Length: 549
Image 1: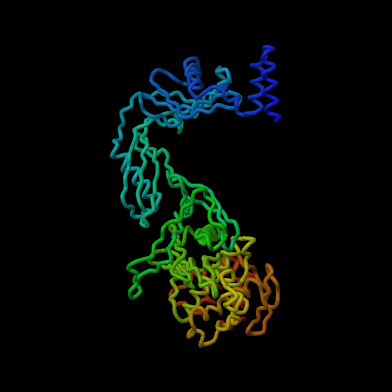
Image 2 (image 1 turned 180 degrees about the vertical axis):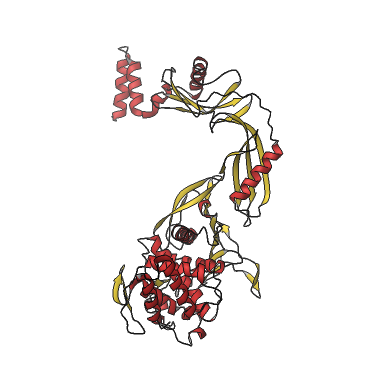
């Protein structure tokens, strides 16, 4: 006989002794652990108990005949304790900060309450001096200002008259929700609280919710991501970095004629249900998107936190990324005309997806260059343009300090495949290791492809940061020679980044050549560290070591 049947037979025998109810109750509890919930107060019971508490404690809760309440939420604990949350109106106007929670014991008796505001709510009038259309205009201007004056489309503003008890003494106010689309078609929204008497702005906040998520990247391990809540899903769009987002190009390409793109590949923003993005494998399309968004974030943060630059253009506006561009596309590029980054997936033999951190830093630095020195993309200035992206893109990698992608002086080492036959795209310690780049300046350097003439400045930057000779840094072996046989001691990569950025943004122009870059970086070192400083002397020595005198 099974144990269950033994228990049942036993309970029937006990029933004849007059104790069947007690035994059956114990048995039910043993077989159904949640059964005791039936004895807990229901939602309706908790509300009834709370109503009694409101009547008995109206004065303590700041309630009077001018006010009404409505239940927002009810929680009943396992032990029967009840918590009823209320919203409040004053003369039928919603009260911001009027919410409160009533706490009741299991038997329904009043325990305490939490109130958002303890101020007495009493207004001489609920007739506004500022009209609803005026409040809508003020809120619309606030949204434009928050988006740095960008031309917004499909603007709608809906003012609602409220009582503001959130900001000191309760006052009549307009709460206006204003929404629009930015130039990329992405939604932007702001809630603006305006004093209904004076028209002064009391407060304002973004009303598109944000969230902190994470992603499994292809190259950087698990990385943090700031995303945007959109209904029941998350968008891979960062409102804290200018609404920068990453979209799927769906393996399509742009249609361009004479350099003008008349049809662009799509950039459908990635979405996710749980805010945990990608798997770290190329089979998941979101994995490459994680790397691209992460690269954007780290580049944004590097320029802002290290150089005080707010966004690529310095105006706080974000760019956007397109991943999965084309088929087996072995390239990544920055495009000023769309203010966007585009990444191919690679062919799997030469390159994997080109979404590595230093590639992102490199390409977006082209955007910084275009907004500052605008170095012409040919001759020696073109080499300096490319070198600027290599140098500052490398600084982004050092800044990120990602243990899965440590700082180094290799360019694109994460994206190359064994079929490429090299460990990286370019080598800053000895650029000629790629088979094409120049280690030092000569009169023919300007005739090289800009990706190869950049070697002179890349070599200068490495020597200035780390010095000459053989060494191992973060597990990578380097051996950097000098053209004049000198021995150099480096000043560190942080100072190199500071010097190059100032030279780029203050002293270089569209026609700067290598001689001009020497002068520009010496001026920058003088500004930052002094004309007689070790750093100033190191800049001159590093240029001489690559034959720029």
